[in-house]
Image (cartoon, rainbow, N blue to C red; front, side, top):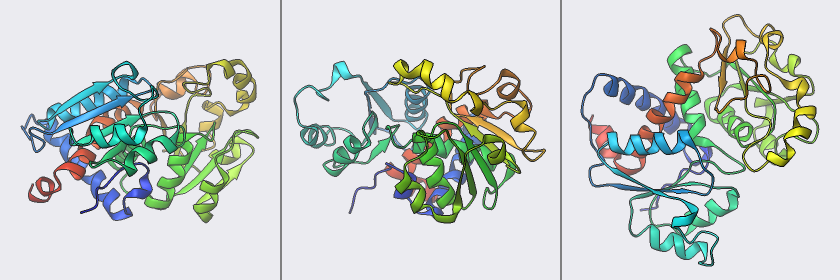
Length: 307
């Protein structure tokens, strides 16, 4: 039997992703009701962090605990990543000792190589190209508030980064229209855009991209590892702020999402992220529930089928 990995949203079928979202909502309801559910008893998740994160560590660690399993945190100081041992050897060894491996790193090619040699499922918790776990949480949040996202219009404003790339894949898998407004030189990868076909439209002006949108999404202007570019990016992205003027171009019931952490006064104003149309706190919480559904799918699919 082939090992299933989750490196991008394209690793699962559209039907599987829809089932995953529905399952995440059900697991969230079960957790709120205080009902014990431990299908991952005695299962171990290795969490390999080359890039730090509050939400990623807490959500995966809490998720494994709630499902009856154990999560093992491995920082760069705790592993041989980048310290001489071939990545392929690390994958071979680590995957014989645990049941799944979550990796948060820089180069996407690194996690692809690791998965090629892993005997257990590998989960992409963020690379420089994709952030698929965040999209599971975002889609769960939309489904909870608005139902199926098929046919909706989403506006992504800002850097054509890993979040933008994952939204492009989500547009393909969940069948919504995606408007992208990014400054010249910061647009998403052309190959990823082309593969999505007519689901994607690129805009030079953010107000045009936001027109008629049902959901507006943004991200920080300078991600981890880009701190030296902060001042330059602030100049380049100044016209790409999500503010009240931009939100007025959207449909009246449009929602706002941000993967966090957010910099109020930069990529988004305080009145938007803290306003009535913002669902960022539900979105943040849903990292926990969406990833629990993912872990269950990869490690105990029979439990979900029987529940």
